[in-house]
Amino acid sequence: MVRISPEVRSVFRVLSHLLRVGALIGLPILWSLPAGYFDEGPIVCSWRETLGVECPGCGLTRGTQHFVHGEFALGLDYNPLSLITGGGLFLLFTWGLLSYTVMGIRIYFRRVAKMTPRPTSPALREKI
Image 1: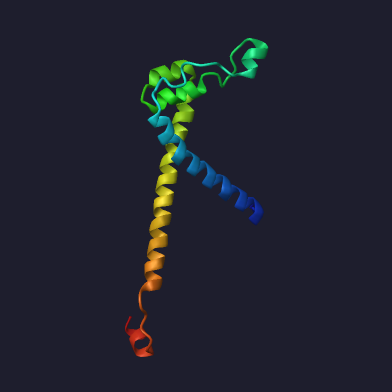
Image 2: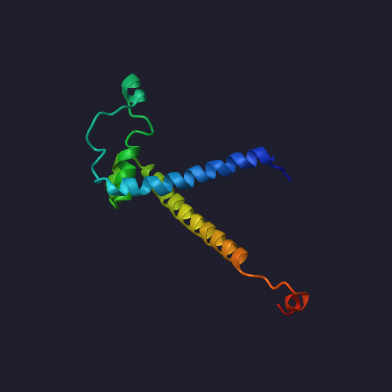
């Protein structure tokens, strides 16, 4: 069995939080922008400028933007990988929303439990 050191575990925990928070912030921002927001403008791909051919990531931002807005066919036309990035973004968003909601509920109930008065006499403690 592989043992993971506490340092590596803490790095994974930080990366997990960054991914969830990034999705929780990024998806609403992409959703608030118009679907064609990234369609116009300069293409800044060093691979394309140097070699003259599109890289595997060309069109990924535009395709993901259209995927987020429900324009799946147009998103797949820009880049087929936008299906994976758009789906992954939705999964991360849902995971972050659920995990932070559950975490907030746990913290709330811990605070309520700390504020609840406890009986001080041993006879009352046994009844509970």
